[in-house]
Length: 294
Image 1: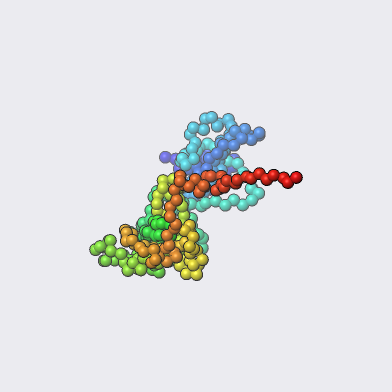
Image 2: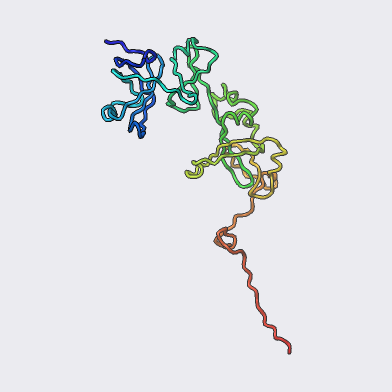
């Protein structure tokens, strides 16, 4: 088997070359002088790259054989002097994974890794010393209500920590394993408290009518919350409640943040309250005739 020449050894004025390279970039271009040509950037096993061109006379012959990402063998080709570019080009310099792991590379340079995403998950698997470590992620489901009704919110780990003043992972333990329906004390302490939530209405909520909304921000400052608490039934902060609670509350026991809205109005019976109606309440005016005195 004949040996392959490294890209670094290629020189002009010789055509008896034999290289094995991979095509990292391939495109076609047209110019008045050269016509339609195939342009490539190829790389050899040593990581050395070179630009290669297929002239217009040979495009039809090699067009079906050349493909980006394919490894090919090139023989009997000519090498020309490269022309300096007007500016500096930045690109990737691939290295082997073994060189990254054994620490043989220069530690003063940063190494970028190019990979293919095969899965997205909240559970992260990390291999350390040949062992897999699972990092658990948690989310918190809340049932909240204000003076307009109830809703369901979901908080992810970083926001739940602000609400609980501790990581969610600390809420798990032997108690949660024995009885998963028994809430930890930190969650029970949230029931009845008032907070200000900024939520995100996602595509699932708008199109598929999902009734659980993602929380983007939480405000626990009482001064800020008090600015949003209003007797207006369309405004107000949200209060946490235990899920499944169905006890009736006396209206006199409700705080301004919990006050219910006014009675429902049937728009069919009161057409002037319909938002589609252009005109408001109309009043008939009786016209009287006055005789002019002579």
